[in-house]
Amino acid sequence: MKITNEREPRAAKSPREHEAPANRVSATEALRSAAEQLTELLGRRPESVSALKPTDEGWEARVEVVEVERIPETTSVMASYQVLLDPAGQLLAYERGNRYTRAQTGGADRDR
Image 1 (cartoon, rainbow, N blue to C red):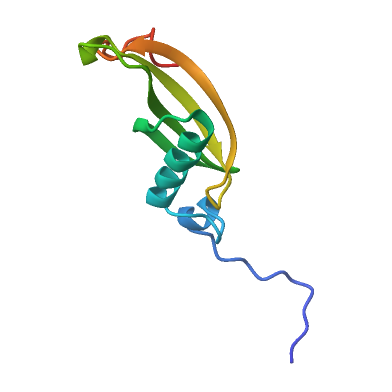
Image 2 (image 1 turned 180 degrees about the horizontal axis):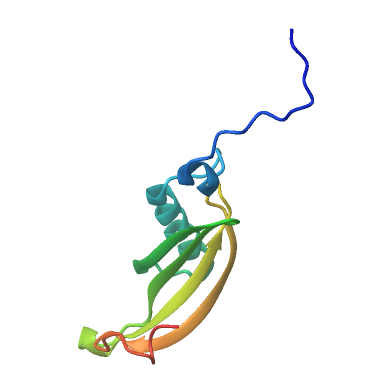
């Protein structure tokens, strides 16, 4: 066995190795988890998940929820919730962002 004081060069990590801890759920599982946990807390089923991204702390999602149902549906009041999940998909925090009518499309008033 040869002992040296020199450090052997380390192999560069691929970008994938930097991204996700081993216990991180998949994007699909994170979406499902965010929707289920928010339903339990709000008593309303999310309409859609408009954004999902991995973070160093887990996952961050933006979830759209019908807050007030109206007729016609285009006048229903929607809310966008920012949801933080840990790597295993457990809800850490949520916050209601903007409210808007279903007929409203994008723009600075809706997106944060």
